[in-house]
Image (cartoon, rainbow, N blue to C red; front, side):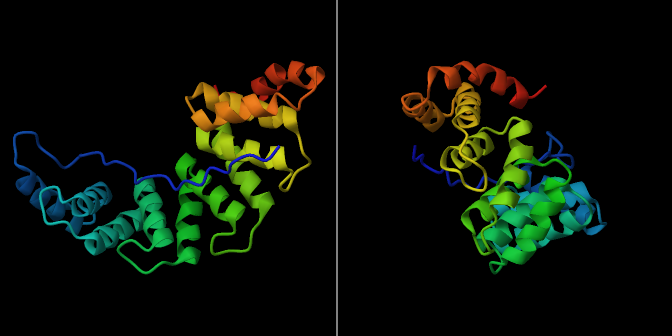
Length: 217
């Protein structure tokens, strides 16, 4: 069965407003966060980046957002590492640089950031700026899928359905699509219905057991 590949780069990670005070205006909070950021407070650096990106408390400035995401990333903020990677990947606020994007995605992914794991899988799956590598794609999709990432489940199922880097395995494909469908993934539900038409009853009987091996705690 030929399935539709879900090609999605996930959105930026939302902030935690640690340097904000409810009683202050957005402008005052931005100034406070910037002061802390300039003193190498990693969380404040991340928040300043988000504020520049969104225009909250200051004029929107994507280049400044990238600058502060990089500062926060280098100080060890995982969300900033992911957002830096995404901006480098798409050329947002900085020239596109897949090599650097991969490095930051990898840093975040190795700390169990599931969106970073998914995007690594997607880059290698598509061959996006790198040589296509199905083995790497499967590795990172699997990590994200095991953590409950619905899009990773969907794309990994597609690889098992089409035999991309693995032997065709309809049982695993069905199980992963069903797990994604349980997370309200509409395309997964469509593919389940189509795949069931070409599977034997014996294969269908194996699906629930296979799902158990992929379920998260």
